[in-house]
Image 1 (cartoon, rainbow, N blue to C red):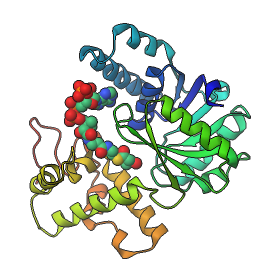
Image 2 (image 1 turned 30 degrees about the vertical axis):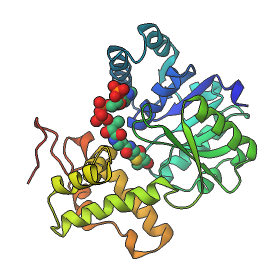
Image 3 (image 1 turned 135 degrees about the vertical axis):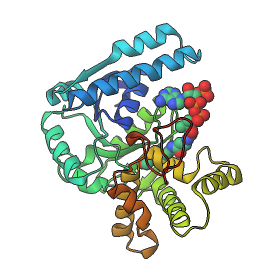
Image 4 (image 1 turned 90 degrees about the vertical axis):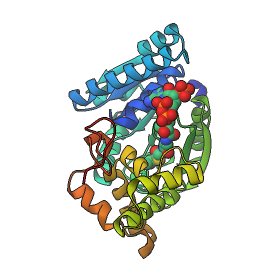
Length: 293
Ligand code: 3HC
């Protein structure tokens, strides 16, 4: 089936949706990026342009490749434009209600042959699939942030995902230059099941005054060769996203060790959502990066 994928629909113009759209266009697919909010779409369009232009300026891709990628990208606020897509990837807000509502709509307008994939970081694929009439064609396709750079796609099979859908999604992921891992449909899948408790533990270390934020991050960067420390990474991912994944782990796996750290909860309550808001654990409003007391 994947050989016949020409047009990919991407829903959601945030960090992940725009990164996925950029990646797919750079790998030769026609892409239609949908967001109901036209302001979000124009932000997505400029972030894709600057990301692709940066690759040209670093000589990673030629100007011709960049121009071809731009030509393959289309932006829309009209869901019906996805009716021609062969494969749809949703990357909207991490809310089961919002995603289910979207899947109901996509199920109505998408080609009967189209696969509906979710980039959810932790919500049950089985439950999302059950809101459609094609659960066998629903699958999790979890990209890592930033999608154009990170080498992994985590594929999640729902209870009814067919072997054909799995094979097509795996082949598509490989055509996008990624290595695939496969997870069953349990809370947090593989990556977030392991990553988020580490980030949560870093918040506990900060909360209980084990060390400064800088030393916690430096410890993990230099001590274990992570490209970013856990608190810096949490800011990069979004503290709201980290908190919502911890809640899914806590509810789904039912053990106290997954309880979100009160400091993480407090930061989210305060609107300190990380880099996208200019402040999270760190303050990004000043240069060089400084710590808000
Ligand atoms: N598009 C294309 N290329 C990009 C890019 C983008 N949006 N952002 C960065 N790059 C490329 C740069 O061009 C550069 O390439 P080069 O080294 O070949 O010239 C390379 O990536 C490194 O970029 P920078 O020099 O700007 O910055 P860094 O060296 O600091 O790297 C980083 C940035 C790749 C984000 C690195 O810090 C990193 O790997 N961080 C960890 C990211 C991570 O763990 N992501 C997973 C989060 S978990 C997740 O996503 C799951 C979710 O469900 C929560």
